Image (cartoon, rainbow, N blue to C red; front, top):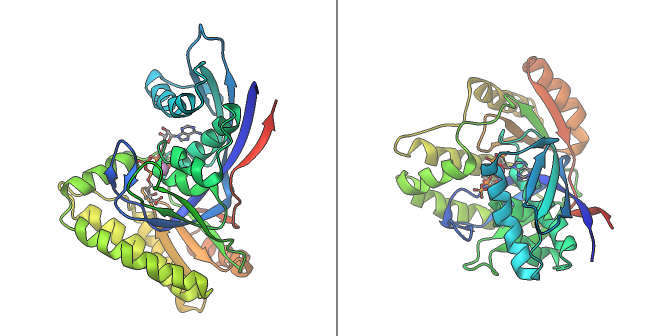
Length: 326
Ligand code: ADP
Ligand code: DP6
Ligand code: CO
């Protein structure tokens, strides 16, 4: 039996978004989604058994977390404890190499890393696809972080069938720039935002229909390695997701003034001939899908148009890794 395991998972940015749960308890989504895993942003998480007389503890970036945060983690650990029938308490120590709760997908790398570490610590050693069904129940977007490259989360209709599927390694000149408009933590979490949208937005049924169509089209674009089509579908799908929030009651919005300026900068550079397309998640930051070979030049161009913003460039990330186990 192992005592301690450390795992790494990278974040992923959805090109076809997940925005709404059909089953909030099991994290079954309303639509299938598709993402790109990034190498620049990740989470490292260690898990260690504690004596039975103690209880779960959770450190994030060196700080002991509140009871409320720890309860969320304990509920996730329980899935692995029940499956493996090893019931001891656990110490979780996690470091985010990504801003927490800023719409840069910290929950994706977080639960993928924690799930990967627990999979090894408990000796379950599930395959990546099977493991993704457990990781899903920590945070939906984390399902897709088990693999690198382009990854689909197939919505399914049960715990077992709602899972990650590797699509393509994205090794055809793909990169992503992040235009950091604001890296503070957001006021409305993804979880709250999507639940409110599902419950109140008149546009929601149209979103589900559009996302189903967009997924089929983007998979064709990937199979054909058609970057323009990939980018156009990505940009349009993201905007449709944000449209659902404007149709909610009361309406809400993750855009900030800087987000609009950043999106305009993408359009400007596209008019100048650069192949670049934006997407946004539940936060004000703007991600730009581009050619890896143009990333350096594009970063300079964006910095000139948006001098106040921090710009981070990223290549394609790999799937979950075990860094240590003993
Ligand atoms: P994001 O856009 O960063 O994914 P979310 O609202 O989806 O924002 O999720 C943020 C939440 O994810 C945090 O408030 C915290 O509860 C959880 N989280 C983030 N990082 C970690 C981590 N390393 N380990 C465990 N939970 C984490
Ligand atoms: C806009 O996975 O963070 O980034 O499942 O409730 O933890 P929970 O939400 P989360 O939602 C991500 C929403 C999104 C789109 C996406 O990543 O697909
Ligand atoms: Co999240």
